[in-house]
Image (tube, rainbow, N blue to C red; front, side, top):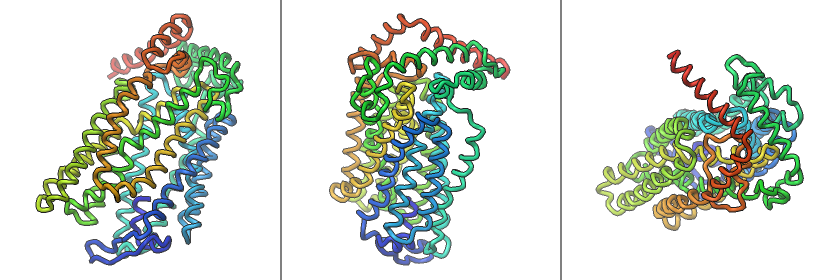
Length: 504
């Protein structure tokens, strides 16, 4: 929608402002006179995502991960078709909500499926790689729109209708690929389809696809044990019960809900929404032309995508907590310096090249650090921490936090930048440093732990990480079957790694 918002025909069709011709080099440049209306069209998408994630969480746990993904894909296609044919603002608002519902479905279920089919030693990297492809999609969308700006001086309907319609193509490919994907073995065990689950675990874990492989068998038994234990608490399955922890006993589901929701809200408040909004302004004020500012914004997206590859390498090796810590430090420093140089840029326009270049550099640095840390980890965390029987609903709570954070800041950012301008970046920079003690005290490490171990990790009555870790070690000593399964899977992963090294 960032590119759509710069399309003259879209702006005039939705009555958001007007456009003026600024020569063959720049083409038509829009001027927005209704920023609240523009922000409302963008932010209402997140209302749809919030509704969709709650629906997707219910269906994901009830009918399976793959069928729910298919339903989400159909919602997205319907919403995209309505958006690309919109003739007025009411039409566009309804289409945005429908499109958002589909995205909510997919956001709730796809990461859960990924976490459940991957091993505990590669779970973070598996989901982080999805974000590399996710941002690749952003890059494709951005440069597609950038190129269409050169057609007919950028005034054609095609400039904004085609990019919206284009999303239908990968969605169709996605839905066709679902027929080749395995259903989550954990969900299959939960609904009693144990033989299917055993066969899929054999295909996923054993080099010879043998369902009787020691690693696959140990994981199967581990999941069976946890499922039988969790069925004793079936009354906690509703969203309301999860929020208040009704009948969850030592599983402390409400604590997990709060951690997931607030981590996703924090993900937006550490500054990515502000950088997305303000980066083109920084580039423009640095003396770059409108076209060049757009070009730099696109290059920033490429940097963003490449930075996610660092997350693939480090997210399991360094852990979730370390990633959040160093990411917060780097992002906080980058935002404060970007704001400071933006101020100097305004106060000393004669040094626009130096100060503007420095501000642009810290925008790029912030985006790279965010892509390597805070982009992926808040999405991975909710997929890992919830009990199996409510895992899709649990991840849906994380998407609720994401929708609230995004929707809130989409509306609030223009107001903040209008009132205090670049000082907005200083506020978000401070939030980064405030997040460090929160993560240290409240968010236990989940990396390299099996999904079944999470019930032991959150069994402590205390909310503090140090108490949870001590209680976790105590419970592991009392539950040797969990430790045994973990040891077998870890040994299998190590043997597989060593075998690959030997072949190399």
